[in-house]
Image 1 (cartoon, rainbow, N blue to C red):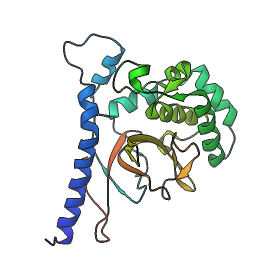
Image 2 (image 1 turned 180 degrees about the horizontal axis):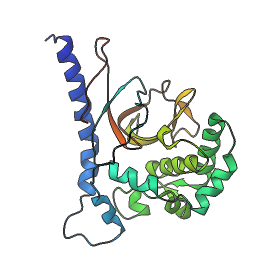
Image 3 (image 1 turned 120 degrees about the vertical axis):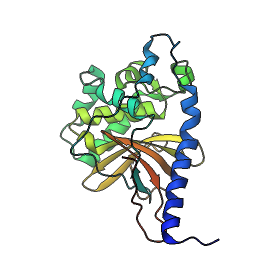
Length: 241
């Protein structure tokens, strides 16, 4: 069956959203909080409030050969907002930031990733928090000394912000990594382009040259994107917002 160009574009967008739903649905089911939930720290996952309007949003993360399409308000926005606003004055975060302050962006990324991986050993949320999926604040992860991929990415993000990185240039990207499956990385935008900080690789990598990671959903300051592929040389122009 042959599709016209407009239909191929819609098909690509549909596939991207389907992939996003397939990735996040199992996690969503593991962390649903109901009216009967106890008012403990994990109730922070109930925050589905709409994001405030940002007049100067982050640059669209068209990385790994994808086209990023605005996704509106997603399940992960509340998590991102919570962890990105926390620990601005945490002593452990500031200590690492002080070590890299004044370095050029590429050197900052390499030094922060190296230091965070030295301090935080990979461990599953079931072992850390006794829940299937939870995004810890940077200070919590550093104090514990263990965390999974998103916890490590969050620590790196908060340290870089404390060291002077523009928050609009830092993104959490949720996707799939060959051959491990679901995975989360930090994306950092510098004058040289987008760089990926992946705890499994251990060193910063260009977000264009890596073909092992496929982004599905990326969250930045005040905006989220779902990723698709350009079809027939045409750019995707669609947004839920």
